[in-house]
Image (cartoon, rainbow, N blue to C red; front, top):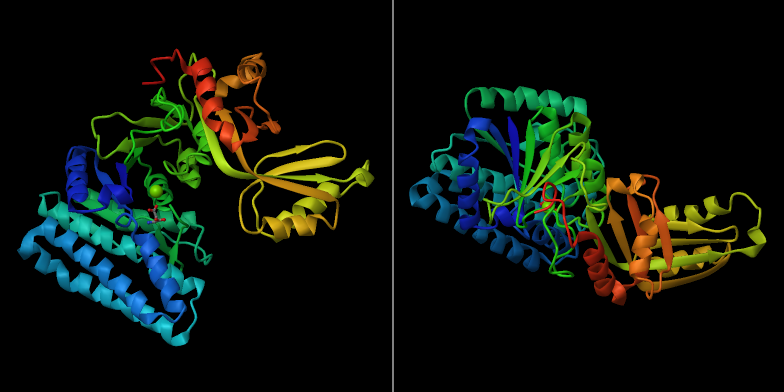
Length: 457
Ligand code: ASP
Ligand code: MG
């Protein structure tokens, strides 16, 4: 069997869902399980409803809900026609009434718990999956809607719940297998799960890729397809460099390094359950279904190019911590990182000397407070508008002279920090945000002017 996951833009309206049905139809012989996101932007809107309700703004919350209701009804009736729409309308109506009830409840108690937030946030996938299942059936694909909360068992970390894999795998076998055996196409919502007590949870924003991997791993899929609105992973951002090429095949390890930079295409955590089971993940474009996309596998074929991709991440702040009196002292790094931990701020790149530490973080509101706390330990300065440029490729391991070639190509650019990670498949460095276009296009010229046709399109 295979898993086919359709992201928000691939189910955004009747036309998109119709297109998804056509894509699924071509795969019926492979016994697909379909995982869908909420219609594009709906999760954001649901969170806006929750926020309005908790701020006591009843009118706004209900108005947003009414707009979402209308969009779902329109999508469903466009897809199904009057007769079939009338069959599922009562169920959708009950769902949306339930949502409104929840929102009124939040207004009434004047409090929004994480638990309630998850019930509201996961609503989009609950209804999108019902609509998709009905649309598929109506197009002659024998499908069965499955409430993912019956299958994906998680802990109680509302907002970013962690799956209990053993329970989940057992439930998947129990619920999904019999449907597949009867020739049905199970259609389930991504992003959502439930605790052992049946309380709704979500897996974190962008979590429906993760759902696809959980389902694929649990059912030992031969392949997981992530249908989105781009042709796959690229050698670099095509907006930065028009020569960007599609990557045909990449290793899990390389894709994971890039995921932090290209989270728009792929949620990093997606890969984990699939890696464990050695299941290939394909990124495919539902608007260009003929394109073969990007195939992510445990080990990629050896490329003649050193790098697979050049990624750049903007909105980075570099924080420098200098403490001469710490020379030869121990515990210095720990006390610094404790500050970041206390502020729940992830640190990305780190470089150290005997008396100083530089770290990068995504620019965020708590940096001033972090700096103030660090200033109790040492001298601190910080600077925003930086970018991390990252070159990824397993061939770095076996190719001498790479750093010289990289930095030689951009010898006139000011480089603020350099790091070559323990994974040995990534060279990263920090520059001014404004230097990103020139740096990326020069490096792309050097490393991708000729490409291995087995690996790049
Ligand atoms: N709908 C959810 C979100 O927007 C999950 C997903 O689409 O992956 O975060
Ligand atoms: Mg997504």
